[in-house]
Amino acid sequence: MKNRFSKETKANFRQLILYGRHAVMSALQNPKRRIGKLICTAENAVEISRKYPQIPLEVAAKKDIDRLFPADAVHQGLALYCSPLEALSLEELCDYAQRQDRCRVLILDQVTDPQNIGAIVRSAAAFGVSAVIVQDKNSPQESGAMAKAAAGTLELVPVVRVTNLSRAAEVLKKSGFWIVGMDGYAKTTIDKVDKSGKLAVIMGSEGSGMRRLVEESCDLTVRLPISDKVESLNVSTAAAIVLYELSKK
Image (cartoon, rainbow, N blue to C red):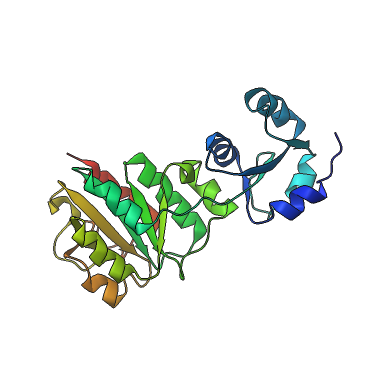
């Protein structure tokens, strides 16, 4: 096969290109993805053709695939043109939560780095979080970098995009959620939180934390019990610790 990309591929699926083995293989297994074409090296084509014979393949040299991405992107010889995932609505999330005895939701306020969000989604999948809520205006859209950092878990944890996080918190409260905000200056530590029922945890950016109105929507604020020699943790690292603690029975 020729080492060039068809005009159809570039025209119809320019909106999203996933890369990296975990991100691409998970997307291929997700029936909610509309797949355009997979561009891959000859080594990968053998496996893909066997597992997914229905997927259109275009074989290319690694150097040609390199040109599709920034220099630091580790694509592993895979580039998948596909549609972005549809966001879950807040109403759909509340309907689901009302049928559950125990539910965990993560809310991200001013977290704008796609790789941080991807890493947070990966932790959310690991600890059974039902959804991640972000503000539509201030949060990056799904991207190849986000999917690579999530290592395939974007297909597992739905993202809810809302206009206003404070209003979203109030809607969650009406559905039985307890709103917990992470604040490095809070007096109570995360291990003291009642882990039963429905919890929505708000995490702000590493620098400025939660915005004032978002913090006012919290039922309580807690902190991680870290050394006073360290001011804060990266938000994705902090999220993993928080979710691990809340996963305990």
